Length: 422
Image (cartoon, rainbow, N blue to C red; front, side, top):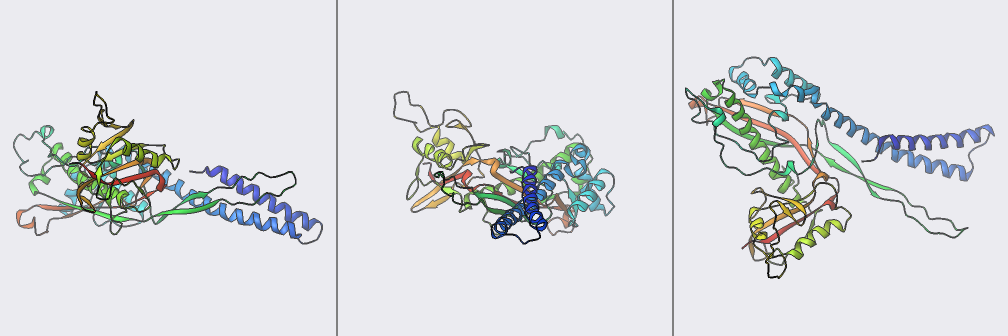
C-alpha cells in the first residue's frame, strides 16, 4: 500500500508550486501566462488525484487502527467472555450484564447499528484463526459426572482458507473502496534537444460491500442450564465451526449473488486448462500453474496451493518424470514444487467439463492478496419458540455475520477446475 505520508508531502509540494505561480503573477500585477496557466492546471489535476488517494487511504488506516485496537481492547478481555451467559440472558429475558454487556454495548456503538439479538466478538468464536474446525451436537451431555475435557468431536471438513495468510479487514461500517494503481509512467529515451512524451499514472479501485452469512443450531434447555465450562466450549465450537465453514466455502466457491464471489467463480482469475474434457495433472502442468502467476510478476507473498483430497492422492501416486527410481510429483506431505499445499473437502471435486465428470479443483497464489472484510461481530439471536425445539423445551440459536471478499490483484491467483483423479 502507498505510504500516506509520502502522498501528503507530494501534495504539499504541488500546492507550494501552484501558490508560487500565482504569487509571482500577482507581484507583477498580471494574469498567469499561457505556460503558467497550463502548469497550474496540470498541478491542480495531480492534486485532485492525490486528494482522492489520500482520502481513501485515510479511511483504510482508520479501519485498520480500529481493528488493531480490537474494539476497545476486546482481545485483552476475551478470555473472560462467556457466550453461554449471553445466550442464557436471551432465554430468560433478563438484561445482559458484566463483560458480555460491555462488549455488546461497545460493538453496537462502534458499528452504528442494532443487532437482531446480541453482538458477540469474532474472537469469542475463533472464526478467523481456526485451522481445523470441529463442532458438536449437544445431545446426551447432561450427566452426573460430565467429562467436558474428554468430549469427542465429530469428524468434519476443514476450513483452511483463513489460515493461508489472507488479509482480514475488520470494523467496517459501510461500502469500502480501496484505491489501486493500474498503470505507471513511461520512460522515454530522447536526444539532447528532443521533448519527452507525457505519461500519467492510472488508478482504479476495488470495492467491498457486506454479504450476510447465517447459521442455525439447536441446543436442549438442559444443556443451556449447565454451568460446566465444557458446555461453554462446545457451544462456541459448534457455532464457530458452522460459521467458519460457510465463510470458507464462500471464499473458495461463492457465486457472487448472495455470497461473496469465490476464487473459483471469479472470472478475472486466470484458469489453467488441462483438457477439453479434463485431464490428469502432471509435473509439466504443475510448472505451468506456477508460471502463470510468475509471468505476471505476482510470485510473492503468502504463496500456496489448495486442492482436494483426491488430487493429493493422485499427485502422490503419479511419477514426476520417467525414471527408474519412480519419484512422485508430490513426495513431501503438504508441499508441492517447494510451496505449501493443503487439501480439504471444501474444495469442489464434482465439477464437469465437456464429457468429463467428477473433476477436482485447485487454486494457487498469493493468499495475502485476498482481503476478507468484516462489517459486524457475530450477531447471536436465541429463539426458544422455533417449531423444531419448542415442544422439546429446547432453544434455536441463529448466528449472523456480515462479510465480503475482494482480491487486491487478480494476477496473484490461478485456478484449475478440470483435474481428473481416476
